Amino acid sequence: MASSAVSDVGAWGMNVISSVGIIMANKQLMSANGYAFTFATSLTGFHFAVTALVGMISNATGFSASKHVPLWELLWFSIVANMSITGMNLSLMLNSVGFYQISKLSMIPVVCVMEWILHSKQFTNRVKMSVVVVVIGVGVCTVTDVKVNAKGFVCACIAVVSTSLQQISIGSLQKKYSIGSFELLSKTAPIQAGSLLVLGPIIDYYLSGNLILEYKLTSGAMLFILLSCCLAVFCNVSQYLCIGRFSAVSFQVLGHMKTVCVLTLGWLLFDSELTFKNIMGMGVAVIGMVIYSWAVEGEKQVQQALTPHAKNSLTEEEIRLLKEGLEFETTHVIVKDIELGQSKE
Image 1 (cartoon, rainbow, N blue to C red):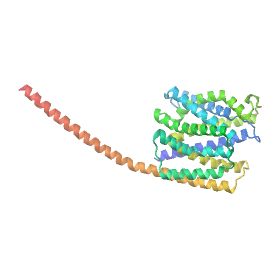
Image 2 (cartoon, rainbow, N blue to C red; image 1 turned 60 degrees about the vertical axis):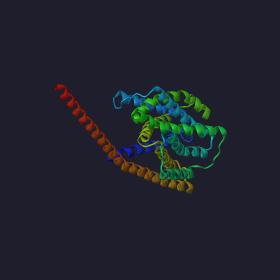
Image 3 (cartoon, helix red, strand yellow; image 1 turned 90 degrees about the vertical axis):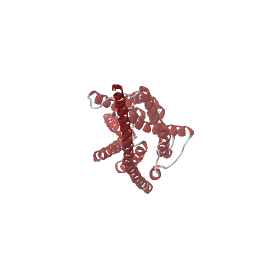
Image 4 (cartoon, helix red, strand yellow; image 1 turned 180 degrees about the vertical axis):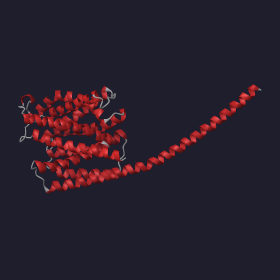
């Protein structure tokens, strides 16, 4: 039990540290004051290429085992994941930052609804209340101007639905094929890397108007690209770990914890403005996360309390069936003995 708790904390910690780290690295890499590498989709392709390479090395050295997953499921998952990445980038470009943040906040209720539709999953009132508190808190500290247009709204809807479906699918595929998080990532990463490296430069040209082949690569930019790729490996692995261990809803709540960390580190490292409104929103979000943790822990305790009762009931049923079977076997033997005695006579 203690070992499982340590593993859970390790997965959470890896995801938070790697995610916040990659955001900070990309901020330096992509900002005008940094290295002005404005090719986000292509950079994501680099991330998955390095992740795929690590997976291939891991399989070749026997560190991880390769399990069979149908190719059509891997292709379908990769299409959904790439739609999520492209949709998010287009949504950020076409909409205001405020509406982009609102679309990200809408993922928690969308994930809840999709899990209810796809897996008939029920959520307690305490979980629903905590999710609302988290969304309000993050909304207060991140949402500013809200401007939207038709194209931006469509892209935001595609991004929200595809991202929610991708995160739900990670857990579903792991359970369906009894495959570990890293093994699943090793199978999907090459497909995503290949498609993003081909389509990424085209999408980036549409987004920024710049060609990646015309970018003047410096040693500093190369260093931050490598750092970003290394952090992406940990970020991708920990994402699959967290969703496999917990749920897509929990992962979304964790994502808003990362938002709070990014805002704080932005203020500490990059002199970003931190207003009273930001601080108040972060405080509300943290309270919501504490309530969510309490609600989820309460659900676990209820399930643990119900499990022994269900086991005892099953045991009693098994005992009854065994008794009936024993009585049948005894009667059957007696009848056979009588028939055998009669035949001898």
